[in-house]
Amino acid sequence: QSALTQPASVSGSPGQSITISCTGTSSDVGAYNYVSWYQQHPGKAPKLMIYEVSNRPSGVFNRFSGSKSGNTASLTISGLQAEDEADYYCSSYTSSSTPNWVFGGGTKLTVL
Amino acid sequence: EVQLVQSGAEVKKPGESLKISCKGSGYSFTSYWIGWVRQMPGKGLEWMGIIYPGDSDTKYSPSFQGQVTISADRSISTAYLQWSSLQASDTAMYYCVRGWYYFDYWGQGTLVTVSS
Image (cartoon, rainbow over all chains, first blue to last red; front, side, top):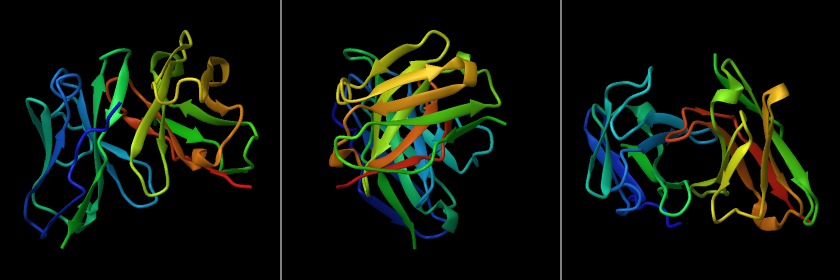
């Protein structure tokens, strides 16, 4: 199963907004509204930030938002803060053959 | 509070077997799927497989089918990931996760190092 495609890195200054894209296919991102996003700080376990394309779990700031158009999902972080610097991974459910989950390659966010 | 607590780091030699664990607490263990995710050093996340402790229904990623075995003991709310013969390429951090369409809780990770 091929990984979803994410930019290797993005950067922004405090207070700015950034968007991370996640491109899949009509068998995963395009087929289901089951895209999720995870934040991973160095040496830590990933943390769920967005589920089912645009829903935020309790405790996640509303500076984080998600959307999808066709085969591409996006994570937007507004009002960038230093603590947002981390790796971000998208994931999608797919059942092209058997139930399966595919992750993106990850995006390193640098807060300048 | 929902928690997934994994077993400690392991150092093994090629060809050895290994079973790592993930104990769930703070929720009904038999009512949620538990999956396993691999992260090789400096690399991204890879989904390996998933089990429903309620009836032990298990599904594997095609990439990991036949390479690992996932199991669960619902009497002690624990899921397992095991290898019968480790290879150096199995060196990675392994996370257990809760959920089906998305993974809302993650274990702290178990680092497995395979080296001669």
